[in-house]
Image 1 (cartoon, rainbow, N blue to C red):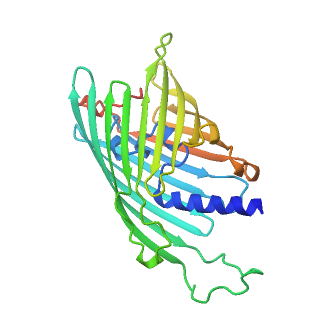
Image 2 (cartoon, helix red, strand yellow):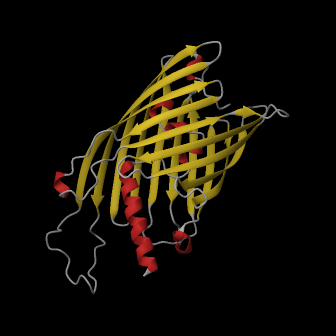
Image 3 (cartoon, helix red, strand yellow):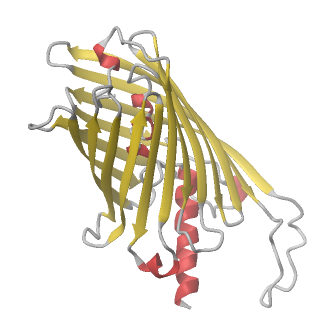
Length: 323
């Protein structure tokens, strides 16, 4: 009975967050802050592409899986654009979507390196129920005859955000899915308020004993407007560069619900490297809540390419990360 309840909670929680299209686990920590907010689009001196593959709760049948691609690049001196696509499966639900983003970066103070950025994303989400695997059971001997095809629906929404940078410090505020969802066809069963808020802040500083070493502590906070649920990630990353500006990195992330500080949802190591224009990252998250007895954790793999490297004519599009 406990297993059934746990799997039910797993499905409901993941299904709700699925449509919100939030960054999953540690994808945003793979040197790709654009996953967090459109305000990061165009910060850097190249076209940055990151492809992510996530397998969640390994060991549970039909557990969520997600594949996504993010790309952003600078246009002109103070603006950037980005695009992302994702495919998500969770049991018999299938979801695909895309985001198209624009960001503009301003110089608050040239000499103290203070910058302010604004961003906006247009989101389109397609949700589908796959009935191919629907089977009769002892409790349900006959499938509802009204279900004759895969049910699908599309909706549109927007994200907006602001980003403040001061030298190697950054603070980002983002509001996702700011429009209320039309739920007429669901007879009020589906949530109409998908709005959620995200704060992401961190600092990149060099080791006092080795100029080729960087540390990046960061915090990621998210709040769901509908039921006031909130969670926090506490992260730390280490980077070591060589004389060619290639580097390897390692880190760890700790995620918890904000009313359960000492009861983490998951915790796990991360590692990766950047060689020339190729990037690789891997994260393993250990589940520490009641679902831990049913799965062996979550795996995230990131592969990236950086193209068209060039020196920015404006410091407001330069990244605080030494890459």
